[in-house]
Image (tube, rainbow, N blue to C red):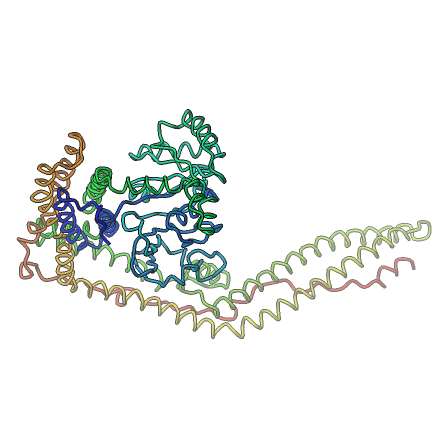
Length: 613
């Protein structure tokens, strides 16, 4: 819907039509989609009626005020606005949802609760991916104005209040809804100054439960001292009185609410084309600066960078690029050869289970459930061997002490057999013997565990060994396939050249845009009386020149290249199998079994007791 007071005035019609032509060229390139969407939005707003953005903290009354101005409860009151909402004129009432990826979906008005109600799963999903919604209402005031109900001002991670700068830029005026007895906090003052820096002075709508001139005037006087320089005008209203007047059809109450004053103010502002023209001109200045940054980045990023560099090298060096490509492939092939040589001979010197475990730990291609099961068994086997050796060593140390004490007692018995009482020494020796026999039992249990695990390992050895050899040969085959693929890829180079040529041609629209900006937009800006200062106009024109100076002369890159001029691909030799024989894993049972000392003998207690006789 193009309102009669839209930006498309007689003096600006040519400018907007040029923007449409420019947009049709910009949208051809998929790599500047964000910039393209910004330009489309600029054109849409230029052709739209006067736009008012309502902002304010939660429960300030934004939604109720919009309902009061429209004269209908379109937006549910008392609910927090979770998605930015544009309310605009439409003979057929409906909802248009604009998602973050640019997708647009239309809904009937009966589905409005999906975007408002926080207690539905569908609503939560919709809002998560929404950018904003537009509600089209058949209402007289909306023929000349669009209302934007923004999400409430709320503190961000750093404690500062957040509101979308895009919404502020799109709005012709900002209406800040504030309860009359609410003092602006520092975070709100900071946000107010930020809006002012963006070239806008908000209208402050002071909401009171009952409108009284004295109360409103006193509040305005006190607030003007704090931040009046950043405010266009203070307007007092009573939303509550306005809503009560609507229900009771009490015209005097409606007048007392001063909503009619605000209504008149909006109608007056909607007819001021100068402010709209300044806003659109300012946003075009911002857009051309954004487009300049985008254009300057294109030659430095993918996919243009690879395509342009490839074609430049091919154009500059022609056949030399073939040699460079050949040497690069040889280097890659050398890495494949090293890997093949390593793997083919990895089992050449493996002679023990421990050495095999070391290899299996670091070679990723040898890891699967079957090998992991064997490794777990082997590790447990080694742990039991270590446990047994430790127990056996402990036993032998204890036994040496026992043996020493036994010999000492034996000498005493023969030297003074009738005089000395040896009962204490015998008791100590019996306790030591008991401890040794306990260790001997542990040694025996550990030994038996080793033999059981050993049996399991030996039963699984040859099947697992064959499986490991199969995995190794499969890995060698993969390396060979990669080497063969390297040769095959070289044959695809001709197709790559065609691909890069086509990729560069996708950016031909940028050259068209450069020419259009120079030949069409620049003369229009120089001759039309757009609302720019001399400094701003100079900046915009200079930005256009900067855009035009970015080099996209791909024709020069392609002019000296033909398919016939490219030398035949050089072949590379793949002879790994002939150079490196495969040494399979070939462990035997004797290689697996660990050497361990035999189980110690149990000590005979009777022999110790005989010392008393």
